[in-house]
Length: 120
Image (cartoon, rainbow, N blue to C red):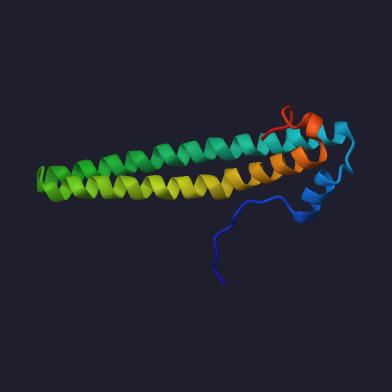
């Protein structure tokens, strides 16, 4: 079955953090590793966003050149750009937002004194 992958923390990781089973040093090491992975995901997302909007601009430019400046081309430009923005927002939430939110909530529940220091 095909599906869309949503990047999440495993239940065991959330419970380990939320029940305060890690030492402070282990939590900081885990945070550093997860933060590196999140930075790589954010960088990849930014590259995908720039590439998507660059391709959008190029294709719309070629369409406008071939068809001329018409209301249909303007509507297509707005619609396609909005669709790309919605897709990129959904990709950000699924790849970065859910994961960071789960980790931050688990840290707030298990280690409230480190909640500001260990945010993704």
